[in-house]
Length: 388
Image (cartoon, rainbow, N blue to C red; front, side, top):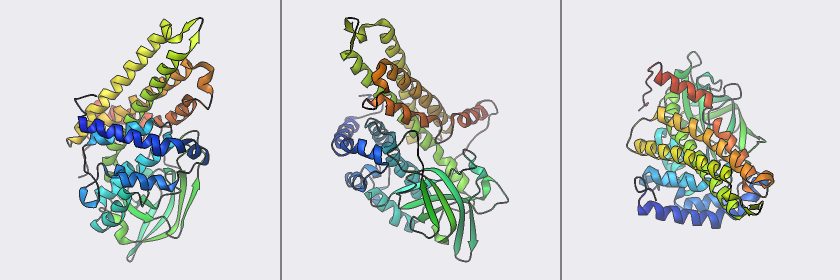
């Protein structure tokens, strides 16, 4: 236990959550990986246990706990060996629900946040577009105000929970004459007329439903606007720090899981008359990997604490995602090598881990975009400020 960040209460939560995942989730993972559909019952069980409300206000059914409960939640999800399942869970909480809690009106929170915490409603966040990628300000989806309604037209892609979610948090242009200052955020029910979703076939994250979503003259009430019109870009940017830290934590956790598995395998595998963990070349490779994992983990914990204290950590969160996801890909690739031919077999965890990890350097802001953000802050002395 790292007592700098985790108390006995944290560790008790870790054990109970790990036991829950082992009993309720792990037996179903292979099925969900094959079908690409996570059975609805598990969302309800997560809600019943309070896992969707760790960082949510108590008045809506949340627990309002410190960020290190969230860190534990993320770390243990990575160790069920399904990046897709983990993504479906954390995208619901830390993408969709984050916007509902931060920008939603009181009536929206009462209807959607409460149900989301209970696991009765699943949310998704719709920002990325087929022609935009990381260029959020260049989005083409529009929301035209007409009387007491908005009419939404456009498309989104690479949306986690994009097929089976109950509601969508959608970014759209309410003013097409300006770039980032013309974006607004809306909440839309899945069954609203004019919404269609196409499930995408992915290299990894196979248990999650990732979709391209089309909006064809979708009419919604004006009170579905979240926050102020035209402030959507600021809202999105203000939450990117949390998303990037989440993905950094995910990365160090899956790398740690891969390394633990590889070490266990090495302690059992024999070659040339001895256990392979006695070969110096392999031992030193493990030493390098363990050092890299620990460095990222300690950095991620430190900036999690700063975020918990209310600091604006856009630079540090960008660094977390940039370095941790790169490290995870490298460590998992080397761990697969330690297993030899078995690392390439689907019945062993490394093949899936390798596929799932590769998304880390793409989703939530590519590594190239993150490097430019960091460069702007260090070289050009650019300052990013929170929207609220």
